[in-house]
Image (tube, rainbow, N blue to C red; front, top):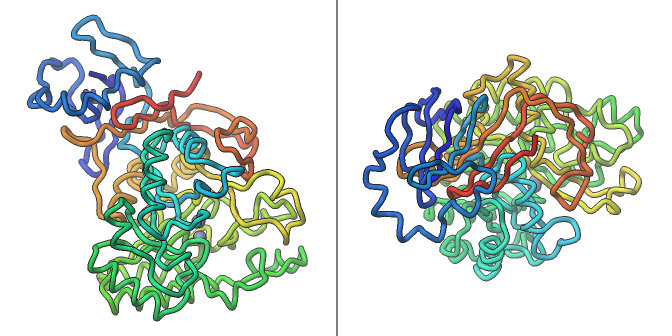
Length: 453
Ligand SMILES: [Zn+2]
Ligand SMILES: [Zn+2]
């Protein structure tokens, strides 16, 4: 039995914002109640203890205090927000095939340090996760070494090559939670239609990396005044929104759920907003780097090179408005580690992508401190928002999995890339000073991360 006490529980899905304690038993939330109330009300929880004994929280709570009765451990959350466990819908763990940049072990350790309790790795590994045996191998590895839950995303097409359909139904049985060819867009409208007809029947969301390949070709940043100034080839904002327009229409045609990955432009956001107003099942995510930085920040530093590229100030302002008003469903990191040597090249030769697990919460807190996002909305964007995209729920209530994120809204700290748990260092936020940090991460009732001082 683990008791999280003295915290402020913020759970938008249950409508809770109150000082309540949480009791955890056998990997599940046993009870949520006012502090000071009796801890003898484990109503019905006891009979579930035996079959979940393997998940018992006792071995994970090394920093927790042991109470004097009934062996109850406590985790003191004084001054902290206790939220449902954060979910990252979009990351790259690089295993199998890219272990010099990241592994399931190192990536999920970084995720836990960032407050995430579940992460969804994209299928562009080597081999691509386009069949059930790769899915199973990822899940087996995760069961052995991961700090967080790993919810894999399966490829839409074989090898993500944009030709034949991948083994989507078999992968779903093996445990994928959505489908995507991320790294690239789903190649053609015809293929997208086939994927969506299939996924509609399976009730799986199709996540698309929206990009018009012909406009993208050869470019390394957003086209605009800054790309001209730097003399770097740029892609126009329409590279993304043209594809969003295509995808929304195919979603309407098929009735399938569409989720737009790393949405980065004002026009794309307007298309999603209009689709939602028409009642289509269209959702989107925004990354912290896109709501924090703009193309003006791009000099020749390859740590500012990602795809989609950083946009204009107008785009950034629109994304923040979308986060606040509900048009955006989730904040996702698109954590894309690249080993240091690969980024130590000229800007136009470097791979696209930045790491993101350990800075996501603190970057979002910047919006909260600036009064541009409420705390409740922030929690929603990391919890019930992404869960809904996957057709799931995320809330704090008796019987729910004990996945919880404890964070401080004012802890002052400086992010140092060299201290990251990730195997890679490609972040544009090295040495950034933050106010607000993840303090403890609880996965299945186990404290998998606890911030030192
Ligand atoms: Zn992508
Ligand atoms: Zn990605």
